[in-house]
Amino acid sequence: MTAKQASPEMALISESVENATARIRFFRVAYGATGNQLMGRPEVVSVLKDLAKGSRLTYDWIPQDPMPRAQVRLVFLGLQCVETAMPFGGNVTMRVENDRWHLQATAEKLNLEEDLWNNIEGAANNAPVSPAQVQFALLPLLTAEMGRKLSIEVTETTIELQF
Image 1 (cartoon, rainbow, N blue to C red):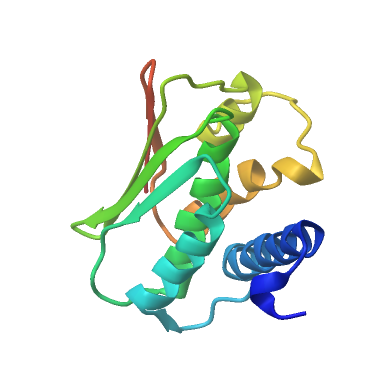
Image 2: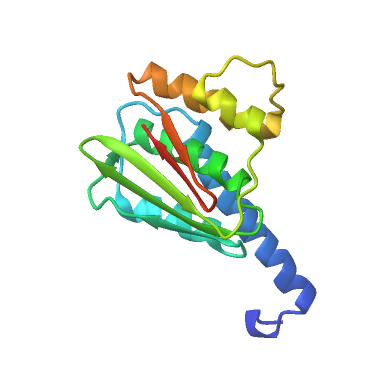
């Protein structure tokens, strides 16, 4: 059976494998070692493009130059945070201006878990963070470790993270 003649079941399995592979590539950047490596635009855009397949989210990576992997790591952790607030989909634009990152997430409807977002802003609360929400604990720690200040602006349809 050729690829063009694959059964619907095999096509579904293939799509699932592609989605899992995209998530693994994303997680390697978000949770892997950073070192002093640079990540080129084609590599970052490829990860985001594969991540968007079969998703309700779209991603716009604006930087044209290679970026330090440690910074891309922060962006990907921030991306994971804003994704949780966009259950019905939306768009996330990632840009850097004067060495300060801006992640702007836009959706028709946002659903923010207040305790998790308070964790990011450093508000003292005892909200438990599950393994699926670890990005909310890591983002402020790694941002501070890199000497950056994390700020958040939320409107009815947008979330903007800056660091």
